[in-house]
Length: 154
Image (cartoon, rainbow, N blue to C red; front, side, top):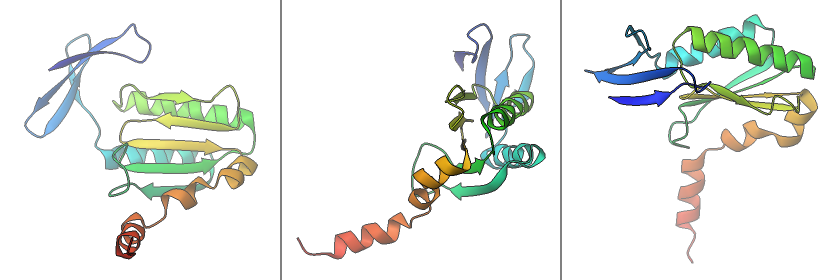
């Protein structure tokens, strides 16, 4: 069992593993199961869709990176809209038992990164999303490219 501080550094909670399930034990001692990566992804997609985020794309990261299981990329038409989508998503994650979620880049209003543990969410203004083209980077077939590099004689 490990003790951890919550995202606001005032809440303490503990994580415990019983069998195959990981539970988050809040300060009051009641345990709620932590959502799986697939459940977190479904929650993120629903929240973004409810808030009318544009062009929502899910990128599975299995075999590409160990940082998360999924990456979600979406757009919002203005800085205010991005902030609203971010706020609602963080509230929904917290309510569903995803602990430690936080957002980076909210002040700039151009690109917001939300770390939800097994799911990483990138929210962009459309012109910034086009500039960075993050989907193209992560949708590449790394296994095929690595095999092609290994086949080339040195």
